[in-house]
Image 1 (spheres, helix red, strand yellow):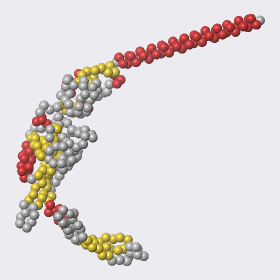
Image 2 (cartoon, rainbow, N blue to C red):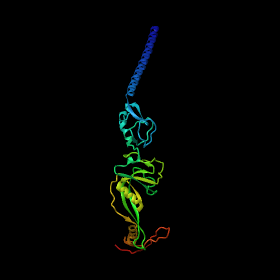
Image 3 (tube, one colour):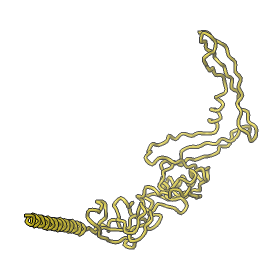
Length: 311
């Protein structure tokens, strides 16, 4: 009887081992089949590629696109940008200017370009325009931050001879030309008529230059040439979206002097009193004309007197 029980136990053990082996084989086979299915799906997805235009070498901002620096490459459809340029559309972008630095193999996107490039500097000028180069100092260059593409107002600063021998010369300033586009500073220029701005590298400090070239209508170019002999031309940087025209107002040093002199007089300054009853003290301040010594700042002299006034 014990032999039958022992035989039955061994049989159950063998069956359990066989079932375990079968389960292991089935699960392993299932995982392998699943892995093959996933691999085939990935290969199928990667097989769906699209041809795009890419940079064949490092490209710097301002370079002109051409077959010399562009190439065709295939990339998975799932990773292709909707703005990527297709090889069949490259003729439209050939000769245009790149607005961003590009690495080798980086796809060319439609918003990376900024209009057709120029073959010569005169291509930046519109019909009826002339280029005029003006000398500039550090103040007028806004500490070297005025760059090609900026919009400026040109002001004429002149000195008027005194009418009488006892009076001094008067310096006056007035708008000469407004909303003028800068085409170049020294030899740094725009490379496309439609280029918005030349961005100087961050962290490189301000540029050092001594001349600015602007493009203006022929009549305005004549004004600039004459104005250089009449007085000094001052540059005032304006926002490119600001289209408001300045009034043809002339300011002069006499006006500033008269405004400074207008501070001479008496003023009443009211403060809370520390006396009981909360009375006010009008303080009369007399301001005298500024006294100035050579090489020193102006000094305003004043005297004050007060009188308590009850509420």
